[in-house]
Amino acid sequence: MLEINNFCLHYKQSQILFDVSLTAKLGEVTCIMGTNGVGKTSLLRAISGTHHRTSGDYRLDGQEIQMPPPHVIAAAGVGYVPQGRMIFPLLTVRENLETGFACLPKSRRVIPDEIYELFPVLGDMMGRRGGDLSGGQQQQLAIARALITRPRLLLLDEPTEGIQPSIIHDIGRAIRYLRDKGEIAVVLVEQYFEFARDLADIFCVMDRGEIIMAGNKAEMVEKDVRRHLTV
Image (tube, rainbow, N blue to C red):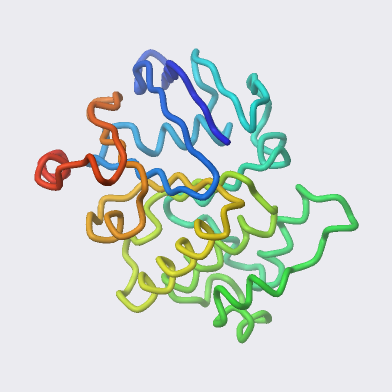
């Protein structure tokens, strides 16, 4: 579903990504790990189009992607859940979900029942403002909003950050369900190793803007991965 090769990214004169390459397949979770500041979020921004890469090749479902604005990439099948959730605090839960309709033709602008099955709490809070939800509920809302766009590639940037354990469990269950359906490729940025270990099929470890270690779950040595998660 996703294939990127030799991605480089700059913020003005500072280079953040150095020739990063990875693939993500339908029915798999590709987990990107590393300490803060190594380029994980920048990589997701480059894939989602919210910050254009400087160079590198990008293919989505076999189609070459140049450098369109992010709403075009979203319409092409990329759902992005940014770090910090970025929900609209003054809009209701329903209105937040409906912002995902912008990527869809009118005939598909409905909230699927699957959203309520994955995140039942949202169905009970459709009229509440997003800013009145707890952090964990906002994270569920952010993931649900991305799923409204019917993505084939789902980008999740640290979905467990600052979330209570019970909701971490619910988010993990939802990711596992999406993976097992085999219709979505998931790229997960995560620092919580136990959460990643239970979900990931592929591990990629980043340091200083590069992928320094990559392989499938069976090949990865836990102590080697953990060594790169501590400062």
